[in-house]
Length: 479
Image (cartoon, rainbow, N blue to C red; front, side, top):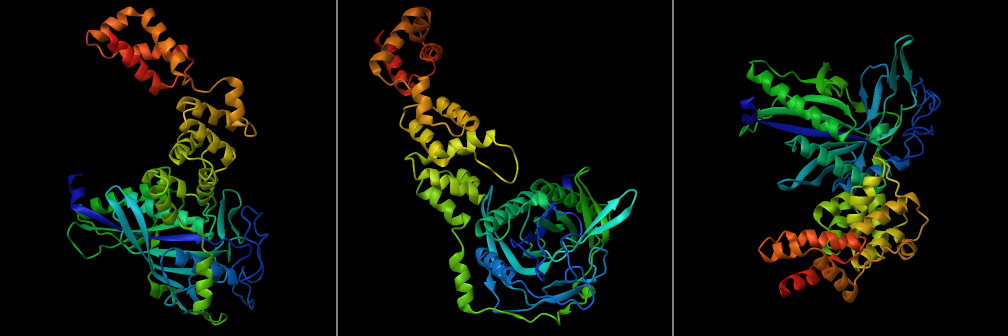
């Protein structure tokens, strides 16, 4: 498809994050994930006639916290509206959301891309209630679970600033790390507490007018977001090039096939017949309340990353990996206070330790930070080599209560650094392989590597390679 390069994709995301509250947005029903169907609902969240909502104040506080963390302007006056539509998972036939007076507006997120930093605008953040869940059973037909009705959400709407699948997933990853760090949401994509709607259109490169967009609903993994965008981009370009017309519609992404399919014609704001909810008063915030919330926000990922690169000397890539999860960042910082070798610590954490842990959103590190710091300290000071350090990490994963210092001492893993001892190993190796020595002196420099390998084998891998390399080089040059 040569003409693909003639087009650019224009993408904006609507990210829904479930707020970290114990109860729902307008009632006291719990929000626990995985409960038996229809055990966490009441007349308010199930939409019974005459039931009146009461706004959960923690919802407002967490939404403001998210807005501040995403560099938004916080509205001193906002209100809630009824978004009217009929669907079986919404018993009262309207959703309480926010329309023209959202809580947060005009923010941004900085995302690292291959070509450098990219700023993606955040148009608005508003609070709203979740709908229920339809369950399609082959024998019983379609059933409804109302447990999710009234679960508090924020919807984070981006500007159409995204131009590639990688930028889109990078933006959502960054949002996730910020919301986690700020304590706004647990962001468990596998449980639906962070999900994404993708709005996408295409246009010829150089054009400024936006094309007709489609929306892909409820994507709950980074890879699904990328694959859905890749497919929809190609589909729209092919459609236009064949003389067709893109329709404004809502589509579903099928992970099994990697394709998108039409669900329904896309509604406009007018179709929802928004109007202010008469049962809820406006949300009024003072400067003092907003500043109190701002003071409670912990250090965010960008600040932590800058600290790791500037003060601790980590690479930008390593720092980004660590700050993506606040629990990992907390662990790293606790360990970094106990070693003078934070770069080695980061390498052990990201390279060795993470490879041993099961994949998933909840990272549980079995080794206490002081023990990993001890391994980094011994490695950095030369007491053990890098191979032994990796072995120690594996041992500690199997036996987290073990002391790395004791393991090194009892198993004789400490690196040999005594030059007199190492010189003996060098002399023995040279005497045992005179042909390799002749080859080296005849110009075959690779022979030195073979000799070094034999020496390291003799030392059981414990010889200090830097010292050995120098001693071997000196011995070979004596000739």
